[in-house]
Length: 338
Length: 292
Image (cartoon, rainbow over all chains, first blue to last red; front, side):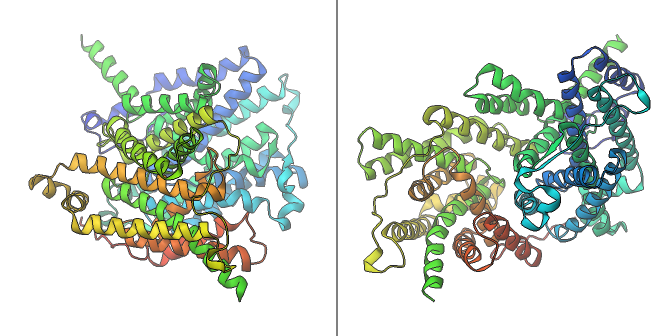
């Protein structure tokens, strides 16, 4: 697994680091992959479910990372695309009895369309204005899903129950474990795709637009096209993540896709390090496990404890997990020299 | 026709609150270039403080003034302790900080005063205003207080030295520093004033939406929307945006079939997006031209 090279520009502490330092390195990648493959074999079902959750939320954070970290567009509306992906998957599986493996790409394509279309009016907005527009999308989505004329398919306020798939080909594993490995394969495939996308011509165009829109257009980059494309790709990946979540949770309802979800994804991105793809999983771990830890410290004050922990993170490492990775790499380099 | 006037007047009354919130949002945005997502929670906490004072037997207007002092000092303290160290951090880190602050205040208020809905008194009474059936005295009072506040702020920024210094610090920080303005304290002052304005909005809306830790979430959304609609760089625009939001929200809820209470907010936000697509800097905002 490797990451995008050299993304943060405003951080003096990071700038001095050579570009190569930002890749996870072949050795580290294999260790991480091995851990992801082996851990479920020794874990209880609930832990496996949490790991699955970690994977698909990490995927959603990665999608936001592609949008904000690479193309510099700020979105608080990811929960809307996540909801569309989850609903497309759930409706296809339950109302039309289509195999779940086929549902995910459809969810991705539908969300790509939504994202691309939404990117059109969003083109004229930037910064806080774009944040507000996407925020509007996120607040509207639960209400739209409750609309009467969609109720026939979506189940209205009650939502839809999704059946969990069994392991195919008579593989000797439980539903949870099969779903974990299935999710892992999907997430890995999309991760590798994203890394390559950001290294490609399009990825460099995204970053050029992020760094300086006017200069990018002067170089001949079609700014409008690439900005909407970034929206579309990000929405498509978020949609697949939403679809995976619908299968794993076995339930979709309008109120699971509120603005809170969008804020969680945003926090995950910041904690993981904006623009650093491997950080997405770290960010997802933060938003899944830290609220639990906060609850463990104090039940009544869990929100406050969560806020304090978040403040600690942004004070100590304003650039998130990425900063820790860089520090670790520098330390390893020094040790090797001695 | 009577329904229409009724709805417009009610819209102006709630619009007054949105205008206050929008004004608070613009105050901080001018000072630090960020939207404060915890603005509503700060206002909610101040409102709870005033409620607590009244429970202890303090008369309304005394509690009102004490709460303003509390909110002002609290706002300054939050800036000094929590956000000054983040001044040079990336924007997204700051936003995460606001979300953390939101979470802390919301959860603390829930623990101290719990989540049950509480009645909040109105100093104006709820009888019909001047014998007309159109608006109540409380709604008239909301409009009156907002207008007074706006006039006060206008004079503060136009005719006092410190108001001028604050405007200078917001417009051109480097030049302001060169002529001897302590820009760092001007930012803190902006936080204090925004917090106090938010507290006024909170205390005025509390009799309508009732007092509970989540009461300001919706109001803040409208406040943001109003500020963006009017233009984030223009306090005047924020106020106009607030009143427009209030009126539009009420009319959409009444006249567009199938909207009702559930879809009011999405419709209002859709309006804003349409305005922004036509005028990206808001109705009264300055359009900033960038250089390569």
